[in-house]
Image (cartoon, rainbow, N blue to C red; front, side):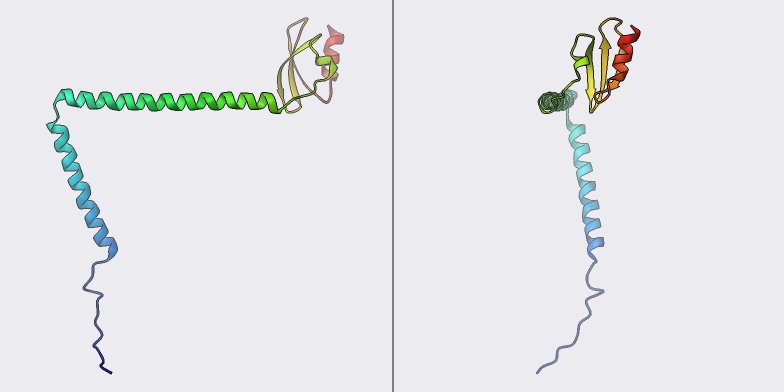
Length: 135
């Protein structure tokens, strides 16, 4: 069999990093030059039109985001209204107190007589009974 001499390619090839960086740097420099030339060649009217279009695009994007947020809030409100039915103690049926907020087992109510806000727990109504006895 013939034997071929072993060749050393280490010094003959550029590394990938060096090659990639030089191409990217050159491409970025050319892009900057082209952008500068195109901006300088535009008339003030064209520049204003471009800015106006960018403003409209930004406004449209903001409106889409606000619409999405409103839809999400409405969806969350509907889910919490339909998914979390809470059984209230009889003392909170509306005769003495109106419920203003329910969070887990904690509840905030407004006294019908003095309009004072009271906090309590759905599992223990002693706080509400004590308030009725005092008033």
